[in-house]
Image (cartoon, rainbow, N blue to C red):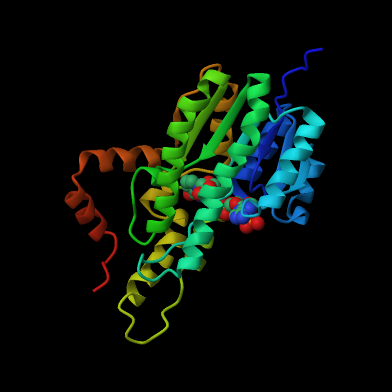
Length: 284
Ligand SMILES: NC(=O)c1ccc[n+]([C@@H]2O[C@H](COP(=O)([O-])OP(=O)(O)OC[C@H]3O[C@@H](n4cnc5c(N)ncnc54)[C@H](OP(=O)(O)O)[C@@H]3O)[C@@H](O)[C@H]2O)c1
């Protein structure tokens, strides 16, 4: 007997921001949602709102395998994977401890890739699936002080472009979501990730301090904040992407993403550097 196609959705990183808004929106609109987070206690409220909840740390192989096995045991397959968990490990390239760089890539890139590997066989079996990868406008342009974060999102862009080609023939869509500035915990996490100066003559002290300050303030006030958006804006775009019969390959979200990407396209590399020097002073 043929099984019905599973359209169960799993969202990573639903303890706050975009992941939480997406889980809530999709559950409210009738999707069967598995909301996941590192600590189950952080998503107890989502269980009250109609989501199934699971513990899932995208840096932990056993945790990823167990979560997908549990969904497949209940649903036959996962229908929609929303790879949302992620953060910015900010700071000048020369100053971020390399173990923290590894953690950034474990979370933003390798966790995302591993979950794709785990869910594709089930989606292939039912010839239906949607893989939604949270990239960023920062997957197509770079701000100094965020180099490792941007590198991780450029990686997400490349992985997803290859994946789209590789899974399309199995009835699976791979889609990039590219938000601009979104008011969530993201800015504060980025600001606090910047290591404080360790010596009085640290040549990066002033630069790193300004990166931390900008990370926090850009989202709260000023012209870019006015062009930003909310986690609910991104959730609405994600729902559009998973509902479309033929989704777009990438969705920019918020005017801030459209304005900054247009600017980046129009400017040469040197002109872009000059624009950035107007916003922050390079390390001297
Ligand atoms: N906000 C923006 O301006 C913006 C713009 C473009 C793209 N994005 C992308 O959107 C996604 C969501 O960001 P957000 O704005 O919603 O930020 P957020 O409010 O800080 O949410 C980040 C989520 O990721 C989770 N997470 C971090 N490490 C994890 C791990 N190892 N395993 C599982 N979950 C983990 C966090 O969980 P904990 O509570 O356990 O830390 C949290 O739920 C990220 O991929 C981010 O890069 C954000």
